[in-house]
Amino acid sequence: MTKNFASSFVRETLGKNKISLEGGGVFDNGDVCIAHFLVEEADRAKEVLAKIGLNVTKINNVIIQKLRQDVPGQLGMFCRRLADADVNILVQYSDHSNQLIIVPDNFEKAKEILDAWMKEWW
Image 1: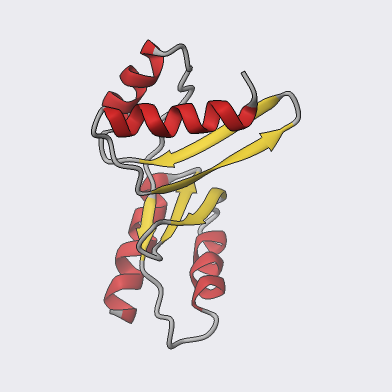
Image 2: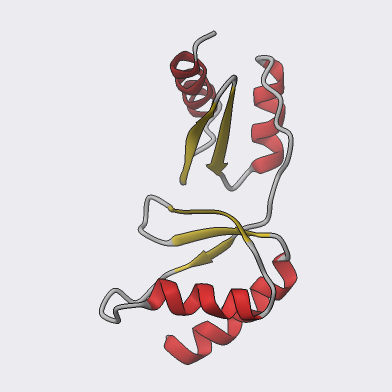
């Protein structure tokens, strides 16, 4: 199965099972294709994909953050706060609603930073 075919197959399979993709991406890593999809029903998506022979290796909690587009440097400031708290960003992308999606290595710490950020900026 080619990587393009596998990627299309995943998207079609989830769609046929009424699981909406809210964001994510597929990354070529040599012999392996790594996919990260943002879905509300992660456990159900994992079950559906297992039925077609695709292995979901991990389900992550994510930080979903709307950045103020009228304030330059928001992404850098937010990432600096994560770094200062020793929270590493494992994956970062935007969803279909232009929100920042981050998979942190420490979700609880990242959530505390997000909550404080929201009080300050929104």
